[in-house]
Image: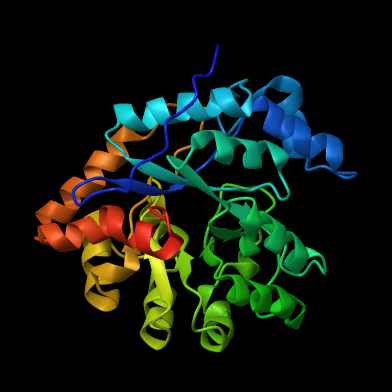
Amino acid sequence: MTAPALPPASPTRPGEVIDAHVHLFTVDLFREFVERDPNPNPRFVKALKERKFGRRGETLPDYTPQEAASWYVGRLEAADVAKALIVNVMPDSQYTRDFIAAANGHIHALANFDPRDPGAPALLEREMAAGYKGVKLLPVNRCYRVSDPACRPFFEKASELGAQMIIHYGVSVDPGADLAFADPLDLSSVARDFPDLTFVIAHFGAGWLEEVLKLAYARDNVCVDSSGTNNWMDFMPYDLTLADVFRRTITALGPERVLFGTDSGTTKAYRTWIRWMQERTLQEIGLSDTDRDLVMRGNAARIFGLDD
């Protein structure tokens, strides 16, 4: 396909939607990571070999960054989504940098790091200069604690640069994940020591909702996103609905600390059903138009500077 150049994105307006948690997976992205890493993740090696990824082995799209950007924007437009934020799972990706440039403000991205890496602060500075809007951390997948003193220089640099974050705690589909690192309460001391940083906990804490609410009570720079199917609710010892979860988090945190997301990838169709189900749920629980706009658009734009 020939990728047309995308016009610059306009600032979003009240009533529009920003998906603050999506993914990007393509053949060339996996190739870049596998060929560079001396000990690549076996899942990524298999994905590149088979050109399939995900629990059901869906086909990886095979696009250049420019082609992928044009294709992705078309998916969003079809779902009535104005902008999106990619939560990168691969560090130091030139493919993603090129994708960000080609997306021209319609789609932004968070860079991925192991915050224990001594080189992470310098890489973060380069990534922010290249157009990333912040950071995605995966402590449960990569088996570390953000409270580890080795992470401290990274958070100091993030604070200096204003690099806000989404963090995945709780359950994960990654077979290498370790639930010993799943508790968001580990973030407490970091959120206390870096009050100018915003920490968005993905998927309502993915089964650690009670811990998220307690943490957010103590740390007003802790937020949540609503992304994904939220099927972690099926494994709770008591009945929960999505309306219950939204109602409880909005009551506890306020509507200005909840962000909408679908957790859509690129090996399957965009999760339009989640986009409409979540907006309808916010209407059904009686959220005002103003507060619903905060959740569905405004908070992501403000926290990550997506309209700047």
